[in-house]
Length: 185
Image (tube, helix red, strand yellow):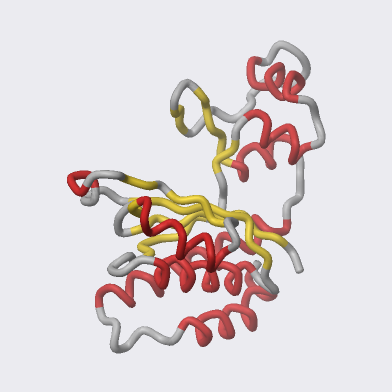
């Protein structure tokens, strides 16, 4: 089974005492933002992982179930399957050294026009994998599957929040996507 990288935007971060149930359910494969004080609970949280599944949709839905079952009142709001990567992550994915990637970023050697970083956190810049893959000429079939899958699941998550009584069951969404993704991706 392939392993898929994705992130979830959560209704809130988790408290430290909520980590054990999530760890037990996912064997530590899901990393989440945590808080220690209630005044920070009004901001969104996030979870990220590399998860195996028959399809990206199946992997996402399984992790959504684990995350939401691990903490009362916690809901997944959105999914993102085009990860942000560090220089080291990029190097690992494209089979280059970190120094080679740094040179590509600065244009010191070879081709210029490396994609701009998407964000900077704690002095570390992060790049969107789809843009970096395109620049290096990497054909990643998971990125092709990601766009329609993420659009469909984010639509389902929104529908579930607005009118939960009419939102289909997660397994129905996964089943429908498994039928159409080969034709649209």
